[in-house]
Image 1 (cartoon, rainbow, N blue to C red):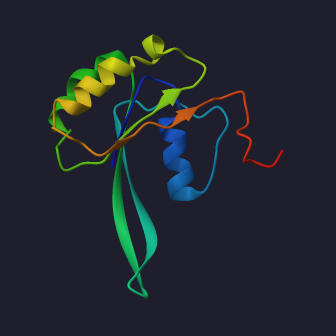
Image 2: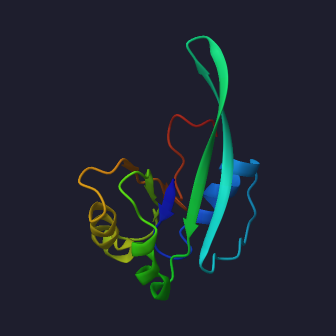
Length: 125
């Protein structure tokens, strides 16, 4: 799983939540690439199993964007993180979608957004 997006949108916070079930306010931004392994317990045909997901957390600083081409593959799941307080232009949505789609015709992807100031109605308040 490869997590991309602009700097300080919450990529590392997502990784920490998935891997360690933790959140650190004021998380320092990733310089370069951070690779973590996430063990996921699944039930398949009434049988428990574990899968390991390698998560690649890419720093979002502009200077690092040129390095992405060496790591992005068509066999990856892409997570494009967005800051819900920013516009499409500020999140550079079109740019990131072009980057991801340039490595695969139909890459599996998801685009969660972070830092929203509203609570969805299905969440208890």
